Length: 151
Image (cartoon, rainbow, N blue to C red; front, side, top):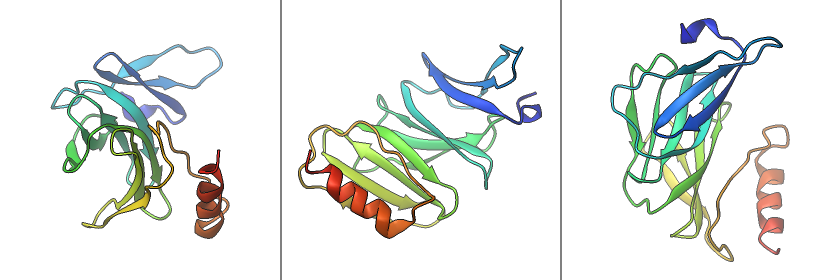
């Protein structure tokens, strides 16, 4: 079963979200059996605290999550999204960050409360991906975002 895999790699294959066991002699890839099928999953991340996989769906313009066994599937962001492409989950702060390539923004939302904020809106053209460095902390991460806008 999916819960037996302890080290894994998540990837999207067509309309499916899959989990690949990371073991030196294994090529076991399991489809995460979602209750509602995805259309175009693009960005994926895993929150080790709530043990859920998170993904963006660029056809439905949504951000969703579910357990690795496919249960408790829910859409957590569906309004004011035009092209949610990049995605990163902060397991420590319990926030989710994403890029929107049409709105040209990077946004953040709390995973379990109705908090949402635009973090970066200036000098962005079609942002595609976002990566968190949880080892640096908030202030240094924001400094890196500010510096990256110059390029």
